[in-house]
Length: 335
Length: 195
Image (cartoon, rainbow over all chains, first blue to last red; front, side):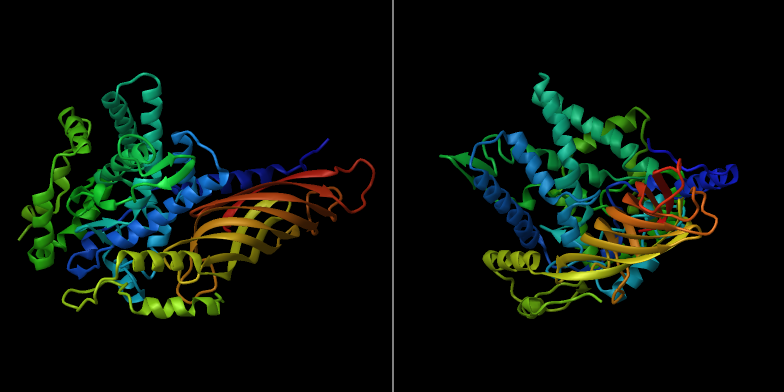
């Protein structure tokens, strides 16, 4: 019979103290969804990465199709979806994001040692202690440009990783008889609760509406991966094939840019973030920033996520996101 | 130090022609490659890999080592072009030696860890999340609380690491001789920092 060694009371006490101390300093920080700062990329040239990122996702889809054909039989679509999700899922992180922050093919900001050093000084969430601010325990996601929209690489994790859970909730609700609109509503509300609690605001002090937008779009990516009128992958005459390549342009909207779609911050975080945002007020007149924001306004629409957030704001459950916009910050700035 | 095989030489030369880092507005941009070319470059970037070893370190309090400090390495196959200064996933062989106040441990096994290393550094400076499963050999000494205080044990240890914290659990079986009635198995547990 196995037996644990006898431990002296003093040593047990020391051990418990260490556990408490380290849990207090650490445990809760390991959550998925990294923070990102699109303000830092203002005025910096970025190549459009639509083709490159599409190619990366399509490579994985092609490999999924090859894998399915090696198995040589028809499978349920939900099983195919899960296999795709598993192919690029890592521990809390997503393979596409990991690739995009490392590949020399991806134009991103910050990039290179010099710009990384500058980023450390200017990072929007950098005004806090990296020891106690759980939002800083994970690495910040750099900014890339996709179809004219600047977004954090964390959105790839949301679109193709976190969204799997959204889709699962949607799928379960559908199986239980919910109509599509009702199933969608349940999934989106559950996702918002996750973002408010364990994945976002409660841990890092930031509720990212841009993350929610990417999660929502990803739910539809998974839904249409192998089902519906226009699926990406089909099983046809005994063979799996990639019928329609993945295209980020189908999903990315200006709301994915966190310098355009403001986050909602908790009070303890907002004071420090606001100070850093003030530094970007003069940049609102920069030609690249003006042109980008003008293009965003022309493409802007009211999204399902925005409708839900508006509902929460009216019900008094969330503050109005516009309170945290750069325009508001600069308008209210002391001269 | 990270290794770079000859196989990636051609890829690197090809990549030198492609714009990557953010540049100031106004720089001339080269002509865009076709979709097929982009797909080929992406495929090459994903598939060209190299073996790299990176140093790991941890400090912890555990049963039966008590206070200990470990040093070792992870050997993993990575995309050759990735510098991992933001973060990478390392999957592969891990080996670590860990002397402590009441014993020492040698462990070898498999690790999967998301971490970053500083440019030109051979150490995993920031471990964000990871786990490992190791076969371990332990020799206790000094004022170890095991009975007998000096014994040799072998077994398995699982480790899970998060930012700023790392846990481990395991089971050891005594392989050295001892007096009759001595415990044959020891459960191990520990908490600390690093990987």
